[in-house]
Image (cartoon, rainbow, N blue to C red; front, side, top):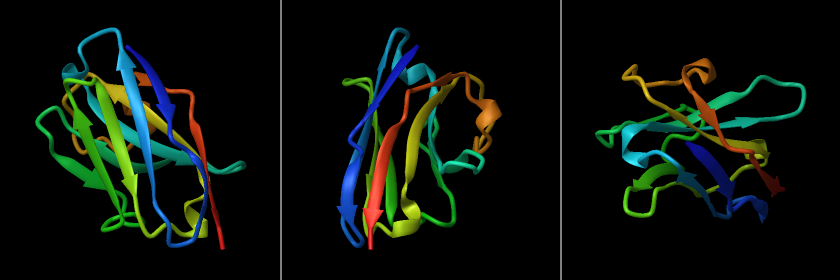
Length: 123
């Protein structure tokens, strides 16, 4: 499956953004999906995951502010980000995994990755 992330940009602290990850190739519904983020010099960090049965799981740092969702008809997964903070600044990556391990918070669990989209939150 090929993944294309989009929706990043510059936003002020307290603002909102919605990231999209469009999947092509195999049926989107066969995969669990995840969002990760990375700051230069740091390891890639788990943000949120969405199972094939629509369970969700979030990093503590984004719980209550971010929402992951999927649209099987559009083959797209979204990350709605509200109340953004400067520390949310990072390149955000979407990923897909075909096995059933849950809640899938480790990057090595994922088989496919999108190219990343930059989110910058100004103070």
